[in-house]
Image (tube, rainbow, N blue to C red):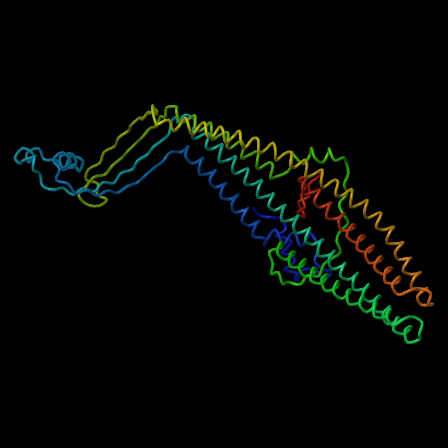
Length: 447
C-alpha cells in the first residue's frame, strides 16, 4: 500500500527538510506512515494476502506440467512397453529372442500433462471467495494499523507539546520563587522577616528545582516517544509547531456510535474474517461432492535425453467421489461451523466494545471541556491572589509561608488549566480515531 504522505516527504526532502516553523502534527503523521515498521508490516501482510487471492483464482485454469524422466529396466513387461513407446519394436527380433529375459533398456521420457478441473463440488469457487475475503480483511486491517499509528503519533505530538509547555510553566514558577527568596533575604537583613522564613523559602526553591528536573525528564521521554511512533531515532531533537485547534465535534453520542460500527476498519476486518470462516465450513461440505476433471498427456520417448523417436498422446476423463475418509471431512466441517459461531460472538462483542470506546471518548471530551472552563476561572483567581500577597509581602504585611502557599496554588491552577486544555485536543483525536474517522493528512473523510 502506498500513502499520499510519501509525496509530502519527498517534497520536504527536496526543500531541505521540514519548514523552519517547526514540525506540524500532519508532518509527523506523514513521516510515521512512511517509516513506522508497524505500517510497513501491515502493508506487506495485506499485499501477501492479495497475492494469495490471485493464487486461488489461478486454480480455475488447471495445471500444465512438463517432466523429463529417465528409467533403466530389464523387467520384461516394461522393456516390451517402452520399446513400443520408443518406436523401436522389431517383430522378428521379438520372436528370435527370449522375451522373458530381455536386455536392459534405457528410456528417456518427455511428458506434457494438462489437468483441467471441470467440477470440484464448489471447492475452487469457495476458496476463491474465501481468499478474496481474507485479502479484503487484511487491507482493512492494514488501513486500521495506519490509522492507529497516525493516532499514536498525534497523541505523542500533543503530549510532547504539553510536556514542554509544562516545563516552561514550571521554569517561570521557579524564577518567581527565586525572586521571592532574594527578596526574603533582603527583608531578613532589614529585620522585616525572620531568618527562618528565608530558610523555608530556600527549601521550597529546592523542591521546585526537583519538580523542574522531573518535568525535564518527562519532556525528554515524550520526545523519544514521538520519535518512536515516527519510526525515527529516539534521540532526534524536535522543534514543534503549535498544536492545531481541535477538530469540531457535532452531533450526539448516538450519532458517533452508529457511525463507528459501520466504518471502524478493524471491525470491518473482523467481519470479513468471520465471512471467511463461514466459507471454510462451506468448503468442508464441498469435500463430500464428486470431482470431475479432464487430463491430457503428450509424451516423447527415446533412448537419448529429449529424444522424440517415439511419441503418443492420451486424453482421459476422471470422476471421483470420497465415500469414506475416516470421517475427517465431517469433523472438519463441524469444527469450521463451531469456529464461525465462536467468531460471530467475538464480532458482536467487538461491536459493543467499539460503542463503549466511543461513549468513553465522548464523555472524556465533555469532561475535559468542563474541567478547562473551571480551571480558567481558578487560574484567574489564583493569579490575583498571588498578586495581592506579593504586594502585601513587599510591604511587610504578609508571611512568607502564605506567599509560598499562594505560589503553590497558582502553579497547581496553571497545571490544571494546561492539562485540561491539552486533554481537549487528546480527547478529540481519540473520539475521531475510535469512531473510524481518518487522522491521515490528505485523506480526510466526512463524518
